[in-house]
Image (cartoon, rainbow, N blue to C red; front, side, top):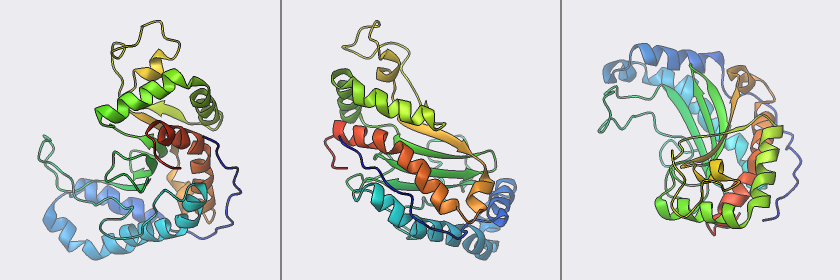
Length: 237
């Protein structure tokens, strides 16, 4: 599970602007298909195009961390999550997300449940994240078994994250998972149902000329966790 020591690529330029967040704020107040259709050009200009440009500029840094990750600047089917909400099983029937979600996921993963890096942009807060969200039971059991059998590398990854302002977040079990004692030294980690490292950031960081360098560096801090999760799931990294 050796990880690489990388230099941050010298990438400059801005992608997002205050107008990007302003559009999301207006969408939150006018979340209807008619309003979105009337403001489609604005969405393309200040949200989707900057997001695709961000993904394109992030690609060298992401692939330098791992060639197994994807950074695909496509409107549909790439790293940018679609703006439409899936409201079939939700009480909230508003049709559009009021955030931008960008995921640089493992190429062997088919959806948001794959290991990957993530950027979230919204009025209520922006954050950078890495790991795996809501893994299926087989994958979850494999990660827990790996932590139980190979704790040192996992703890080193957690230390790196902690040293750079990340916290582990997500859902957890109330009781110990089946097969593990409540006295296990890593019980808190074994109870996790998500293995996600999260760091809140200011939106202004994404509007600065050094935004690409900044995000690449943050993802590099998460590389040991990603490498560990991929090792647990028998994925290349």
